[in-house]
Image (cartoon, rainbow, N blue to C red; front, side, top):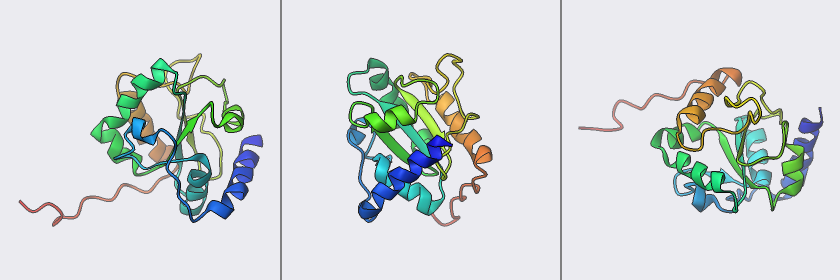
Length: 170
């Protein structure tokens, strides 16, 4: 119950900035050239308006595991799958309130949350580590990709559009 309220409060705070889709701090470190990373305010607003789910990554600039996890977001399949989500990148040192509110099992980093457009954190889209379920494999994109694919069913997302027949003439 508290998480939807927090997201609603963040949404209300974001309304004056609604027209300003803001890129997240440090997005360039996380393949911001190919992934449309948003800051929390504009990302939550975008998710609410578009009714798309959120993939939120909490990180810290000093975290060695976070630095390794960045490479996962350079994988072409992750880049393609990211287009189905509102991608939010949150620095735990700059977003302290958000970090404490969205820490269902602790405030460790990196922490990857799948959130529905109403602000509910999914407990079905978690990694394999029972102690840190929102911590994903930082070396390989396989676990993240599997969860992104599973999210299609959990969030009842429409199938990805098929490429048009004339899009790539030979």
